[in-house]
Image 1 (tube, rainbow, N blue to C red):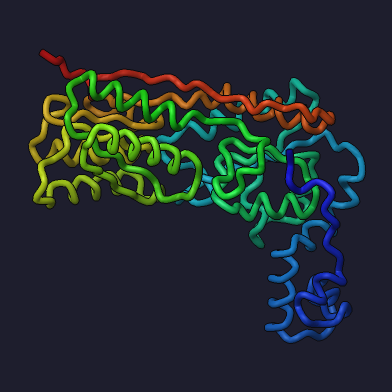
Image 2 (image 1 turned 135 degrees about the vertical axis):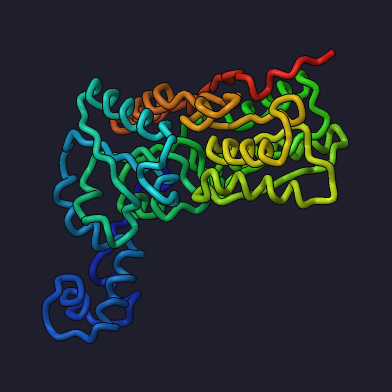
Length: 345
């Protein structure tokens, strides 16, 4: 259930107390009126934003009845270098499918960037409920929505709050296990994994599954973490680390992001390694880069359309008062391509 149910709304008195100023100062600071020192005004704005008051001031009246609008926040896009990352079509497919599913259920869909930042208008919270894709641990967006009693479901869990159960499972554990099994079937003896750095269930569950497998098999852990914003350059950087290491190059590499996989594969090929004869390469998310690489890279289709439909359906059921919700688990599909087409004798 949503852990924000039943919480009291933040008032201007709460903001004044927290900021250590008068109610009048809070009002003037937030409305841009009166004579308030710049530092004090900014302090009040920051405190109000952290408590969720400013957004609630407008949204409260507008949300007093059903609006017929759902909100969508895609957290990985908030941390990437662009809201239109080159070659990454997962998020656009997800957003499009979510919009169509919302329409089928009588709602519109509004795509919102991180509503905890000052760049988002207060009216962004004037919706019936939110879908949050890939929340980070202790996600401030979830905290903001809970403070304002706004229903929400997530795609992937908040790893720091196991008590929150309204989420759609993305299958990271199963994907990692399936990829390791596939690589072993193709003759891999030493498997490396390259995760992202965002603290979300996709990265953490994948890493946990890999570490468990390595411990069970007695294989040395070969783990790299690379910022999601680094794109193909990040994959090249990991390859450079491998090439500079005194240890042999692993004969299989699992990169969670398609951009990292494409960059790593290209750099290893430049260094004289053959894909897949010398190194098998797999990506945990399909993308333009994985499909168009030479050779094309085996990747996981994260099924964004199916995931989006399940998330919207779950949210609508929440809005309709259904309390007996079983979070669905999405089964993704491994698209086998030439990068792992090594024949085992």
